[in-house]
Image (tube, helix red, strand yellow):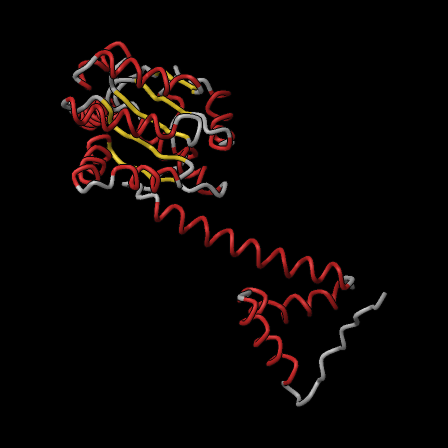
Length: 270
């Protein structure tokens, strides 16, 4: 049995070691280590770190930076209309939403299990905000996410279908761990569109997560998809492994209007 030993780097000129480290970090594609090794080395000397502690600190800095950049990229490529977080959502205005259920969804374990989330409720209560917030959580957890409205999803699938590329497009979409379909029910679809949407849902069944927001209860989805049978089959696949949240409350637009009127009335009486 032979043992391989690694020789210490030759010091060379005064700036030889820093130059060598700069070169090696470029080769390894670890720019954060290249930028911070000297700073952390000084801290290690001051605080009497072991070699292992210094190495761990360097690697942790590199990994944290890479994960941060990865999260930013995932959020950017998710195509959220706006970046909104769960932390920014005012839960006091939505008493029908169980805090424990939302906290569980925020762990994004539903994505790992290829489960779905359905948000039902009237317009303006924050369904899209919640969907984006959960999508952002999934991005932070390392999952690929893609957001769009129901009408845009249909347009995308229709274009692929007419180009003879529907299966290829569905396969491409399956690469995303979570897709978000916003505003189901706002615009009715014809039979062809309903069939395309059904194929999207069916292609992800137990393979990837779907999050859907809708202003209509399930009993009225037949109105949107022009076919009660297709709607029933779609709902069956969506809810089989799903958390369904039926939300009630005031529209935030109505609430804002009411608050503005109250503010104006107070100002008039001051």
